[in-house]
Structures are given as C-alpha cells and as structure tokens.
Image (cartoon, rainbow, N blue to C red; front, side):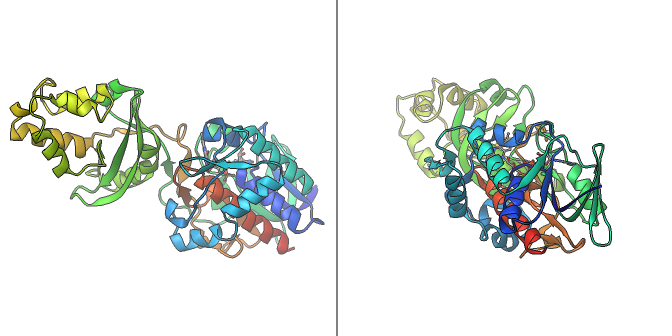
Length: 411
Ligand SMILES: Cc1cc2nc3c(=O)[nH]c(=O)nc-3n(C[C@H](O)[C@H](O)[C@H](O)COP(=O)(O)OP(=O)(O)OC[C@H]3O[C@@H](n4cnc5c(N)ncnc54)[C@H](O)[C@@H]3O)c2cc1C
C-alpha cells in the first residue's frame, strides 16, 4: 500500500493552500492531495462570477459567524490579507482592489488564481490526485488509513479540507462531515446554506420586479421587534424573490433565527439614507407634485409605482391631497416593509455553508483535532462562514496555512 507523510483530503482553496504550506515548511515530506473531482478547482473557477474575489482589503473576525470571534481572529491573524497579496504576487498574480474593498486578480480571471495555486503546489512537491474520492478514514496506532474506490493509502497525518455542502456539483457535497464524525468530531446542530438567495411567494410584487436593484437596509427582527442583524447594501429582485449582496449577507442570520422562531421577520428599508421624519417632511412639502414623481426621483420607477400600490395610494395623488394615514402607510412601506420569506434557494445556490466542525474541537495554534491527534481540519468544513466580499477565501487561505504548516512541523 502507498504510504505518505501527509494526506490532504480535498484539493479546494483550503486543501491546496494546506498542501503548499506543508510542502514549503518541510520539503523532505511526501504530501499528497486527494480530491474526488475529475477536475481540480471547480469552485475557485466559478467564484466571484468567474473573477475570483480572492480576499478583502480589510478582514477581521467581525465579518464572520459560527465559532467564537476570538477563535476566528486567532487563525486569521496567522495569515492576513498582506500575506495573501504577497503570496499571489510571488506566484505572478497581482491583485487589484475595487471600490467595494474586494480584491480580484488584475486578469479578472479565476483561472489565473487556480493556475497559480496548482503551480505553487507542484513546486512545493504536492502530488495532486484527482478522481480520488475518499470514502473512509480510520485512525490506526501511528497512522491513518484512507480509502476509496481507487484503493487505499496510509498517511502519518491527515488534513481534512473537504469544504461544506454548497454547490455540491463542484465536489463539496458534505461527505467530509461524515469523515469528521467518524473520527469522533461533533458537528454543530445546524448545517445550513449561507450567502443564499431567499424566496418569496410566486405572486409577491417583488417577484414581478425581477432585475430591479436598490441600495437598501435589510434587517432580521425577532417576533418582539428586537433587531438581530442588519446590513446596508444592494438588493436585487428576482423571479423567485430576493438576491444581491444585502440579501446574501443577511440570509444565514434569517435562516438561523427563523428555524428557532417562526415569528422572525425580514424587513427592508428602501430609503435608508433618510429618517422617517425627513420622509414625512418631504411628503408634506410636495404641494402639487405627485407621490410617484417624488418617489421615482429616489428609486427605480417600477419599484416606486409598486410602493404606491402597496400603500394603497393612487400614484398621481398630489402632495396636498395626501392624508395623514396615507402618508404614514407610505412611509411604513418605504422604511419597514415586512417580507413574507418562504425559504431559501438551498445548497445548490448557496455560496457557503454555515455550521460544521466547531473550532473549539481544534487546537487553535495548529488546527489539530483535540479529539483525534494527527488530524488537522481547515477551510469551510469548520464552523466559520464569512460575509460576501472575499472573506471566505481569506478563511481558507489562513486556516489552510495554519493546518498545513502545523502538520508538517509535527513530523
Ligand atoms: C458560486 C460561488 C462563488 C463564490 N465566490 C467567492 C468569492 O468570490 N470569494 C470568496 O471569498 N468566496 C467565494 N465563495 C466561497 C468559497 O469558494 C469557499 O468558501 C471556499 O472555496 C472553501 O474552500 P474549501 O477548500 O474549504 O472548500 P471547497 O473549495 O469546497 O473544496 C473542497 C474540495 O474537497 C473535495 N472533496 C469533498 N469531499 C471529498 C471526499 N470525500 N474525498 C475527496 N475530495 C473531496 C471537493 O471535490 C472540493 O474540491 C464562492 C462560493 C460559490 C459556491
């Protein structure tokens, strides 16, 4: 049977990075990365709309959820954004920062990022084996036995980097959770889609506004009105409901809260730059101008018309005719619209997975399992999920670095 020093299971962002740093840390070691997919890097290639949003100019633990912020910070600090920029630059991939703070390769092509990682893995001596899906890992006395329909392999150390369950056709179908459990790890109670579009009833007026986007504030509220989380960003109406960065960012908080308490509400403020008082004043000063004239100066016309209709106000109503009740209804629709969310688009459309292996089960200096010595766990399989904007890759780079280095250092 084949025998290696380190076997990385999963050659996605975190697994490739772990392999690279294991090889660089101790060039004498044999490092193998096993991946079930025929072609390595499918998720990297589809990331950032094919451009790969490699990281964000400012990354800290506040952009993440799941395990404790202190635990997440501890890993992020070991390999920060400057390290990421330097790593890719050293492999010939210069990154550029966009106005949103996101960093992309100047080529605007995810392919260059994947190629850089594959070349770096090759120069670090990592042997990548595609079409090597792992079915079982068992811990023997001083090594691990890894098997699949391709045969089996013995490894002194294992780095588990099988990702989450999002977009399973890329190869990340959640099987890694089974492997982690079989080695003694507990998983979080909930493993749910994150950065996922949300659905509305098919006849909801927003579904008919498909293609329209607006800069909104979106918030999750408990049944008693306590705000759990809020984001200000762009929202996109689609034929099934809601998407766009604001919705993707809030989705995991809404899903999590709604699972625990069905009275959880998702609310939208369509004009977050203005206070309700300002809106009331502007409406009171409209005189002969119509409500629609006022609203479409600030929002897309079809949305403006729909908001009038939702408030039950004929859109050609001149300001001086607006009753106090009509004004209150319109301001309520504009600033605090409750959305009857029916669900989410599921793992097929989720960019990441919330939940997984809790960081408290890992040694935070090394990412070695506290439960199964010799096993290292990194990437999205951990209970860490970030906002949209490059944060999830930064988690993969940082945790892959810590896991890979530590596994190599231990030999
Ligand atoms: C559409 C989309 C766009 C995204 N865009 C961005 C972005 O622009 N910026 C950003 O920061 N994040 C983005 N993300 C999230 C980011 O891609 C992930 O968080 C990151 O790739 C996770 O890396 P990972 O290595 O932990 O897991 P993955 O990248 O999921 O890799 C896991 C690997 O393990 C393999 N594997 C799984 N099970 C087994 C098994 N049993 N045996 C062998 N191999 C196995 C899989 O084939 C896969 O190659 C996006 C995600 C999606 C779906």
